[in-house]
Amino acid sequence: MTEERLQKLISQAGRASRRDAEEMIQQGRVTINGKVAQIGDKADPAQDVIRVDGTPLKAPDFVYYLVYKPLNVVSATQRQRQEQRRIVRDFIPYEGLLFMVGRLDADSEGLMLLTNDGELANQLMHPRYGHTKTYNVLVVGTPSMKVLETWRTGVVLEGVRTAPAQVRVLSQEKDETWLQIVMREGRKRQIREIASLLSHPVKRLIRVKLDFLEVERLKPGQWRPLTANEVVQLKKGLRSPSSRRGKARTTAGSVTRPAARSTSRPGPRPGSRPGSRSGPRSADRPASRSPKGPRPTAKRRPPRTEK
Image (cartoon, rainbow, N blue to C red; front, side, top):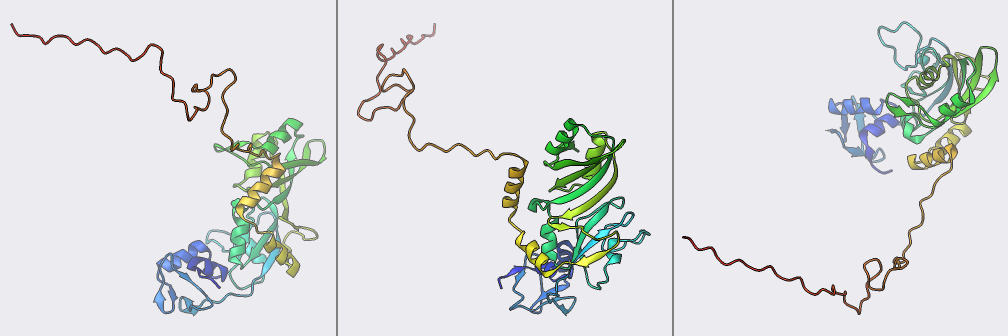
């Protein structure tokens, strides 16, 4: 196994997030082969003895839980002192640290993934990896085709245009419409902000799909572990950010390829004379001089004598 940064190894072991791991290192709580570690240090778990608070760092058996977060439940894995509402972590009977993938507002519901695989969670959460999230959204009124197209191409929120999204109508009633929205980015309350900006406020928001993981038969408050095949598929789907961005551009519209560069030298312009500046100069012919000849020198005035 190759050397990795300590904060990454600590996160992979499920002991803390990368940010918290950096704080542990700065506080002198991490050692490598008996020496206090520093920020930037690397180690190989197969050869080095890494300890956190005196306890050897060992990779746990990874667990992956898909949970349906109900309404009025807070997306959190640790309870804040002032928080009286239930948190999504309360639904999973697991004693160790879990990372949360796919934050939802308290007034939204739907799928979330909880795991102690810190590296996987980091890639699934980071917007640059472009994993898709699918929502069923009930909005007020009946959005016009122009409104839907505006949503698809992106709107400006806080000075930044949103990325293209897939938006289609699922069903319509008198005063409300169910939409399905597939998106890759996930700003805070993005769907609600866009809907309000387009004069169709959200009445209900359900995340029904995380990448290829679907809600299926899960009810609010229920959870299930991922199958071995789902874990394998999830890890196979992790690709470099560049390839994900390329795929996103392809689905949003046609890809414009740059024109191929010509390796040949440009020829003279139509109507230009051989040897002129508009075309390539001949190697065996010197540049022509002006027919007027050399420029005459100015006459010098005689020196001024003092009176």
